[in-house]
Length: 141
Image 1: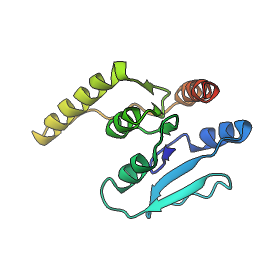
Image 2: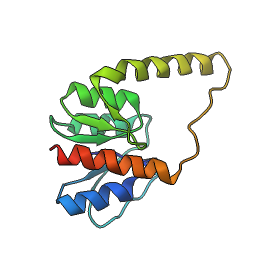
Image 3: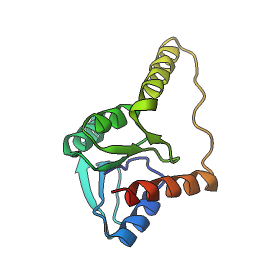
Image 4: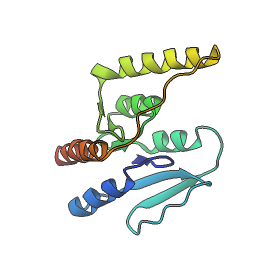
C-alpha cells in the first residue's frame, strides 16, 4: 500500500511488484492522477489527511506500507504491517518513537514562527537505497 500523493518511488514499487507478482494499491487524492497500468488506485477526496485515513483503514497484518508520514507508519506498525519511507528507511518499533518525537519538535518550532529545514534534494542514491530496502521487505514476505 502506497501513500502515493507525493511519493517519488512509485515506479520502483511497480517494477518490483511486477517482478514478484505482488498486488499494489496506490492511495491518492483528487488532485493527483496515477495510471501505471498495474496498480489498483484508490482516489479519495482532497480533505486534509484523507489519503492517510483511507490507507490506514485498509492496512492489514503483513502488508507493506510506503509512506513518508510518521503517523501513518506508526499506525501501520500497530496493525502488524511493515512500513518504509521513500529513502529506504524501514520503520520499526525501535525507531518510531524517535521519528514521532522529532516530528513533534518540528511542529512546535514551526508554530513558534521559526523555520525547520526541509528534506535534502532527492538523489539517485536515495532511489537505490529505497530499492534495496524495499526488495528486502518484499523478499521477507
